[in-house]
Image (cartoon, rainbow, N blue to C red; front, side, top):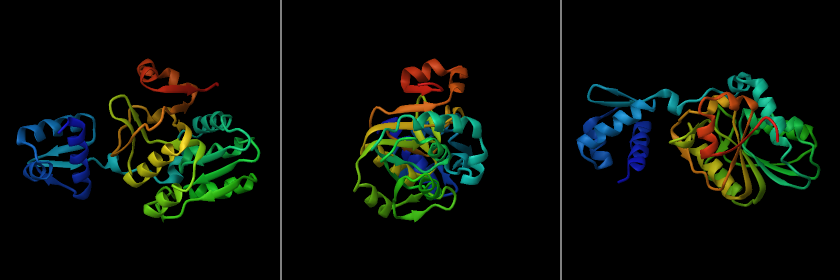
Length: 252
């Protein structure tokens, strides 16, 4: 079994229990004790879990995220800059998927295109979209109390009915090694499927999301473009990220 797959399985098993012993992990993953020990050391080094006597536990930061109210207050000016920039990519008569999240929410006041249709799983987005006279469809399903995003089988079934010119996806973590990640696996599925059904995908993320890793991996289905702020140029690792991802920041 490849290393990345083992890491994913270890984190998935730990997400179900507060603590798992080394022996329990060996039995559940089906690998040797020495292999699991090495995997735990690597996962601890990147902050995904903590090794404790006889086993491991998942770090809360990997699976938990601030509620939407708190997130909206964080890096607000940068998110508004990104929102203004991202909105310029929407053209007249586009059909758009607008992911739930605080950065995508900041796009709405800057949308100038006419005749567009927006599909969203963000309940907080609906009122703002309607205020701006934008035709709005929402995905049904279970509502997450922290992010007010609709998720689950019904949301996925709703999503599969549509095809998009553009999808704007929020992301919690962007990492050189572990790619795109989010704390919640169900939200990750919505993001992945929306990218599958879009001709063009844009990841909207402020600079605090770089070098962050969370529980659920979101595959880069299409050649997505990361839209961020001019502050990304101040990252010491900007050149490495720009070689790994297509990044546009600050100006078009």
